[in-house]
Length: 236
Image (cartoon, rainbow, N blue to C red; front, side, top):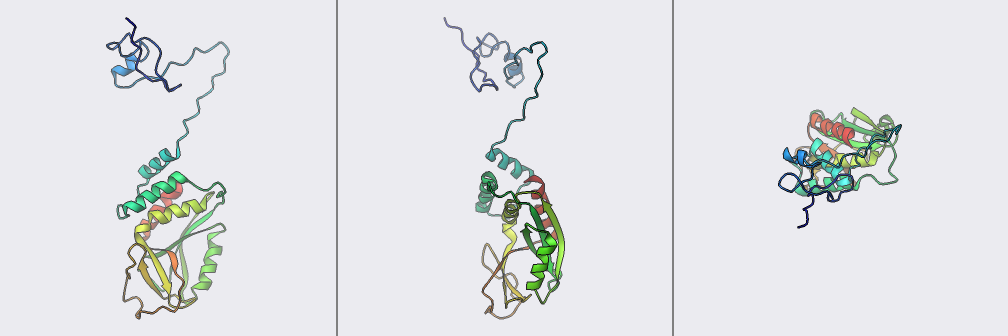
């Protein structure tokens, strides 16, 4: 009668162990049986070290993109207020990763307008230059209001990728803002997900003079905005 073989799978070759199963009810070999007894199947023992052989530390296993996505989602889970579709888009974006040519660093910045105190309207954007230079350009567009910077974060590389993740994580509170005229600091603001007007008392009237829209604005507490931005910059 042929001797049964060990049922353990070795880590080194990812193949079935070739030793005879002499232990644990003829299920494991003498090398794997001790670990199997406590619920952990051991790997193949390392080969004997030769005299004067230099010991080389094993490199850590490389995570696949899917595993990296799951690690990031566990370390920094998106808000439950996001839709299931948005959660899937977040996971897919992490799996896809940054573009090969997207190695540029830059800054992520957060600002609000002086004409909207206490309204929790925050602009979250990115630039490949310094945040201060970009905010000066925004100040020239918001002629009727002062741009107030609340934070800026240096990103060494993949700044576009980091910004896209931040915007996806904040999708549940994203809004589209339509200025009443070019350079105006008065807007009509709508929820991005539903298209509903956020505050009908903000600006009276139904017609908009300006047709362009500002899409990188979010309606939440500054604490929540910073929590998402800082968490993703650390993890991404």
